[in-house]
Image 1 (cartoon, rainbow, N blue to C red):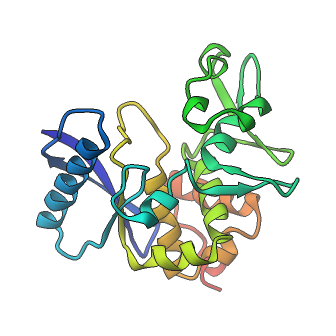
Image 2 (cartoon, rainbow, N blue to C red):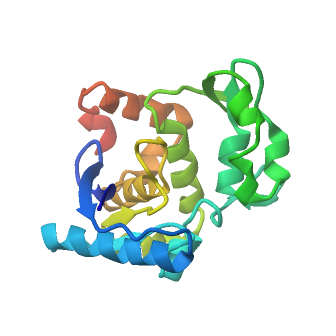
Length: 228
């Protein structure tokens, strides 16, 4: 058995509800074993909450949409006009006490970027650098969420198809080992879309940070801003 989160899009702040689900884990690194675990996780989740429309977002998804929405495949358009996987862009934006951002990470194979020794040997992470702006570490998923939601906003077909779902998983995500999760960011996108908040919250990075910083300190967002 294993315990993994599902991320549910909800209509009020903080816009994503996380539920831990106990399910049967299928050991092994083969894609087929991962997919068995996904099916087991979804089955256990639906037994608790029948209203869920679940989508696995990872390269192990059995749905082509889930594969396309993986950070390994979702393409970020850079100022240069080039498009690169979100996974590379995210890690290449990290700034550490003793170095970074390491822009060379943009050009290495996506499956290798997370294991680059510079990400492990440069001291503590202190923020993220993107388009001349330094992003904070709190709220803890703020930069990854911004990057994912903004990128998805530019993908017309994907952003339409994803709204047919209201809950998301990532079988590769272990909350004991990682912080950011593509399934969580997907749920956030769906919630903001359904609540008509995407235009406002993506109007500027400062606005995005401001609103979610309010949420992280348990203060309600200013209703006149969010729903005007």
